[in-house]
Amino acid sequence: MAPDTIVLVHGFWVTPRSWEHWITHYEQRGFTVLAPGYPGFEVEVEALNADPTPIVKLTVPQIIAHYEAIIGALATPPIIIGHSAGGAFTQVLLDHGFGAAAVAMNSAPTEGVRVVPLSQVKSTFPVLKSPANRHKAVPLTYEQWQYAFTNTFTDEESRALYERYAIPANGGILWGSVLANFQPGHQDTWVDYHNDNRAPLLFVSGSEDHIMPPEIQRSNAKHYKSDTVTELKLYDGYAHLLPAQEGWQAIADEVLDWALAQAAKRS
Figure 1 (cartoon, rainbow, N blue to C red):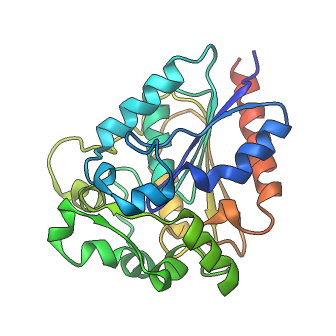
Figure 2: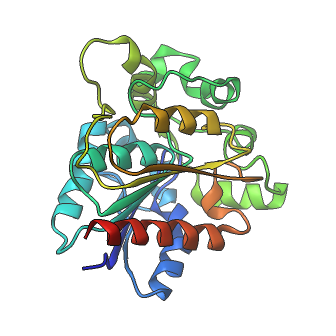
């Protein structure tokens, strides 16, 4: 049976609200669309900015378990599409046996990917500049947001999106992702790159992404040594907040069509 449900996984510094247009777009194509927030993100952007306590309490295992419970309750495996940190979580979900096919969009890397472009260092510096931020929810200023998320947008567009979407990020998880490659044993975003049973995976990169540049997705994709489908697609001119950039509708359709075609081959 062809997948009839799409699960959208958001990244850091935003909430499921960042998927608002994709939800409507995919629903108009006849799909059931779920865009769950992380645990504690049941409130709106404004509430999380006023009281970021739920952000501080987050852990990656909690996030993964939350999505596994939601996806595991579905009648049939869905298409999973994750953005940024949500792309890394999507890879973990796939490795754990969830999903009919998946798309990791401008994805954060899973454990073992050691590429660290300078633009990523600048984008994440607001968090990584101090180890004390491991215990905090760290917001971005508008200027930091514009550099990391919306560097190809007009100032008017960028400011509007900052006001509508931006929240602080969990400093501990970001620090953990940096330290994962230097600690023994499997860390929170470890996946089995040799897992032949996982569903097909498409990496999508925006050529102008500062926080998760294309070289990160290229390296991440090359780590996979399984016989399952792992592909990479680059979209020229797109920044990190690709789901909100002009022309997103064509990308939304292209990645969904790819996922549906791959799911059909496995059924």
